[in-house]
Length: 172
Image (cartoon, rainbow, N blue to C red; front, side, top):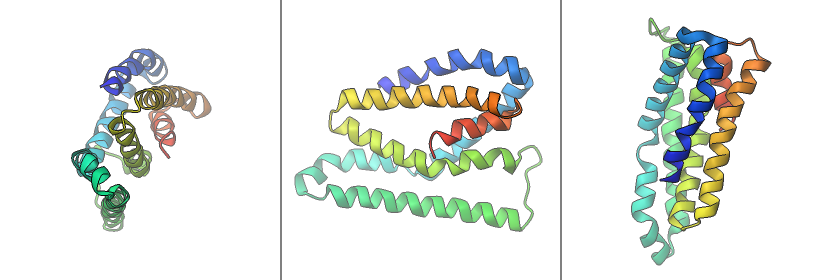
């Protein structure tokens, strides 16, 4: 619950900064790629976190929590491997989308597996009722993601791709 509320404040802070450097058109491109990256994340996350939540208390009671988390990691590795194989085959076959650049998607794709692990970690904190740690980790994540995008603008050439790398590097 807290994570959703906190994460809504980051864009309020960084949107004006992004727009002043990359313009409204650039921000539209950034939003498009972040949305595509989020859609890819949702598909390849495969509701593993939801499954861990449903089985958490039973696995704690039965002493199978390590196996539950191990299964989640295996599913994440398998789904990420499938994504990378699809990406490799599309590149080898020269398959391209007319309006979508793989160069812009790469930083978001590379951050998917670490983001999956982060989601799993935060859900375990939540299920263990470690509210302070859960809140601290999520606030720090939102802050670091917001700051990393802005810092990447200054380090690199004030382009959309620099923001995408900045946003993704926090999760890697």
